[in-house]
Image (cartoon, rainbow, N blue to C red; front, side, top):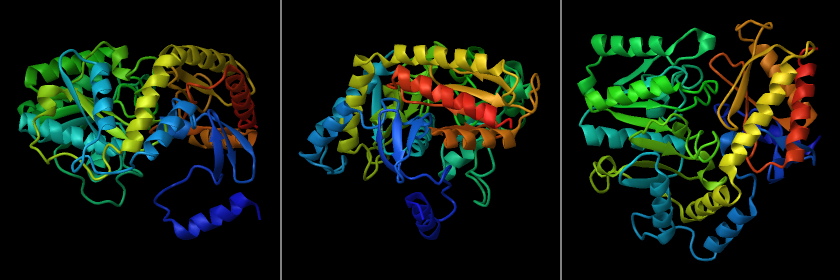
Length: 428
């Protein structure tokens, strides 16, 4: 029995099925954009730990910062004995805030925690309870963030009633024949039929939907939401958990639109593989909760803070924002070329800002009809080629590409060649 097979057997026996695993391939080691499994096989990583590894696996600067912090202390709980790395990181995040005026930041551990606390902050600031999100959105797996998530299976299935006061409007996407006008009309209907805007604490939106299919939020929509929030005193939250830290060709995805949010949630690539999340927001809003109302035992771990400070250095020193745009153009150009072949599965809707790139697998060329089965064949064929690739989307027919932004040109080209062979193999 191979080591992977042995580990898979142990995994099935020891771990509940609720936590799904894309592939029965177990990591043994990793460097930058490559990883090796328990049987010694090499893979190129086009998944990046679901957008966690913008600075790659084990970036030397991140590892060095963590080792230095390990030699000092690993945990005190910031609410008991605070520490400088937490403060230093928040100072840097405040300077990066994608809005004018004074900013403050608070740190947590997971993306769901960040979203939960952003909602708490918005409710404390406004004195209201209702929150509006979008269909296809993914905001986490806690009860509150599952309620905000715009997809039933698997995130809400069997988990009983969701928290009250959560409303959804359609997210605009050409594949689904939903326009910005349709979304805004639905929001207008919602205000008339179900919830008075004076009782809405926040509207939350991903600048590019992640799990929902990598659909960029149109600038026209974001501008309209900003206006609506200003008119009614609603807090606009940009969920930057997946779009943040250079992935979209800007530090934060919302910056592609020029629209200024009130709060942003951050996580994933913030700490280069170490658990860390946060909320950056307008200072007056951030100060609304009472002392003790926010926090967490492990929130803002000093180890993760040290890693995040190094990540911000790497993004700046290695010019990863510009690199993201270069990578994205290269990938989208190659996908457009591959889509012209007549021996691959049918591809359409190549999209995405920066290096947050995706395309849809459809039943036939020129059709928008999703093909989830063919999508599975693509990801499996990619794995056989030695390429880790993820799918997503409300119809499970979107292939998303999230390689580290530190990937070398040579490894990128090798990965794209593997992807092309997988697209051909999936059509067989």
